[in-house]
Image 1 (tube, helix red, strand yellow):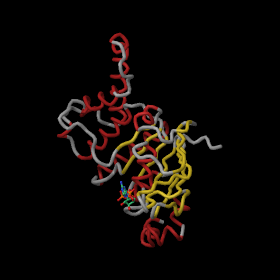
Image 2 (image 1 turned 90 degrees about the vertical axis):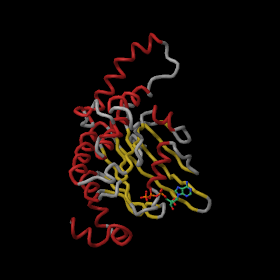
Image 3 (image 1 turned 30 degrees about the vertical axis):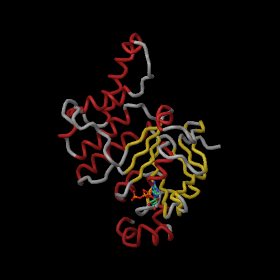
Image 4 (image 1 turned 120 degrees about the horizontal axis):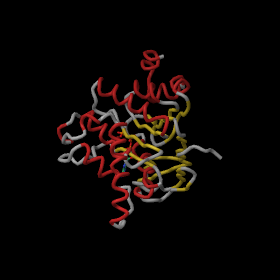
Length: 254
Ligand SMILES: Nc1ncnc2c1ncn2[C@@H]1O[C@H](COP(=O)(O)OP(=O)(O)OP(=O)(O)O)[C@@H](O)[C@H]1O
C-alpha cells in the first residue's frame, strides 16, 4: 500500500445527473507538489472540496496520514492535519495580519480548555502564529490592517492562516489567481519553501507556475483524469495536447 500522506481513491461526486468528479484517484506525498489542472468546469474545485470535507463524496475513499477520513467534517479533517486555502479570501479585513493569523492558530486549541490550560497554551499559540507569518514572508506587515495590504499579500496571509493550524498536507486552490508577475513569482518562491515539510495539492491555471512547481501533474477534463505523471510526460501526452494545453504551449515551453 502507498505511504503517500494524502490519497484519493476512486472518488466520485454527482450533482444530479452530472458527475463533477468521476472515479478520480491521486496521491500526494510529503515533499511533493501535485498539481491538478484542467479547463473551467473540469471538477478541480469539487475535488478540492471532497478532499477537505466541504462536500461528501458520492463514492470513493480519502486517506490522510494512513487514516480513512472519508465523510469527516472539514474541522475534523483539518485537525487531522489537512490545511486548505480558499479561492475567495477568507480574511477578517478590519483585523491586523497578526490578529488574523493568531485567530487561525487559536482555532486549533481544544474547546472548553480550562483557564490554566489556556494560559499554558498561550505561548504556543503565539509561537505558531509568529512562525506562520515568518514562513509566509509577512513579518514586516505583521501590524498592518489586512484590508490595506496588497492582493498578493492577502493571498500570502491566507497561506499564513492555513500554516498556523499546523497542517501536514495543504490544498491550495488557485493561490496565484489575480496576481501580477512580481506577486506570482513571490508566491512561487513561497510554495517552494513550503514543499519540503508538506504534501501539497495545487490547483492552478498559471501554467508557467505549474510547470515550475509540480513534481506530478494530474489533468482533469469533464470530471475525469485524462493524464497523470511527471510534467514532461504530461506535456508530451497527445490527449492533453488536444484537450487542454494545445500545441502552442508545448512548442513555447518545450
Ligand atoms: N454545487 C453544485 N451543484 C451542481 N453542479 C455543480 C456544483 N458545483 C460544481 N458543479 C458543476 O460541476 C462541474 C465542475 O465544477 P468545478 O467548479 O469543480 O470545476 P473547476 O475545474 O474547479 O472549474 P474552475 O477552473 O472554473 O474553478 C461544473 O459543471 C459545475 O457547474
